[in-house]
Length: 138
Ligand SMILES: [Zn+2]
Image 1 (cartoon, rainbow, N blue to C red):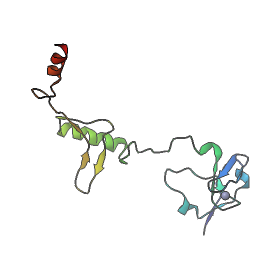
Image 2 (cartoon, rainbow, N blue to C red):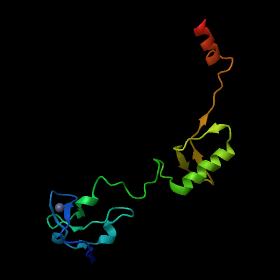
Image 3 (cartoon, helix red, strand yellow):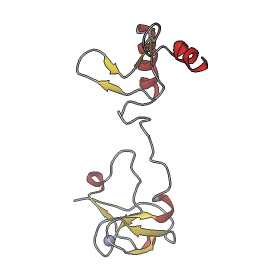
Image 4 (cartoon, protein in one colour):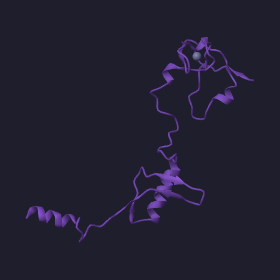
């Protein structure tokens, strides 16, 4: 059991993350076992709710603000790694289209899967757009 008092202005409005309690930072309790309750990149609580013991956060910091360290994609691969992987994919597969938001799947092997578009040529098929245009015009 360890306790931690987080430095912030006592008059700032805070809200409990669990119950409906609201008050000021100065009214919150010290946070118990804070190292087990914080997540990297998460919002640091102002203190602990005196009513229920859940974490209480500064109202202005909760909601609305973008989540810090957004990975940049649903696949969880972000930042420079993402850019590097997409660039390698384009170099290694110059006949496919790879979008900026291509999905990346990191496997156990020495590489990654990247979703890509492949070109389908309609020339001289029933779907040939040039032929279709000619037929419409005729
Ligand atoms: Zn509460």
